[in-house]
Length: 97
Image 1 (cartoon, rainbow, N blue to C red):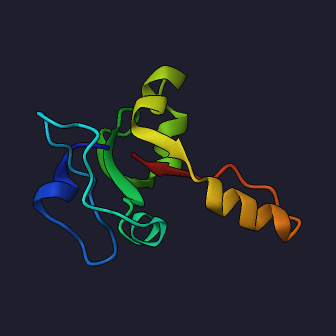
Image 2: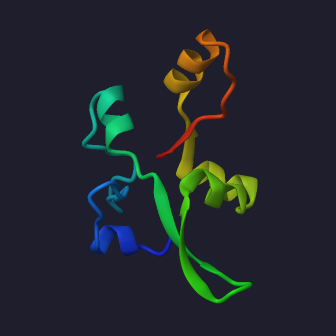
């Protein structure tokens, strides 16, 4: 999600989500632990008000999108939500698909 800069210039702390055009639902991540570890956390975008490039958390960027568009790139992290709920905390955890 974002400008595609993470896919071509990967940082050490983030993992871009790449989609195979002929099999868009295919994934190399086979366990929930891998899905959590290798999920994209930040995305690059252009702040139209200032005209600058910025990195924002994916959840923050998704909140700026129309809900239908956000739903195509994000999914609920049910495991994290359940674990936080068990600790008495509520969080709308989402990961990139």
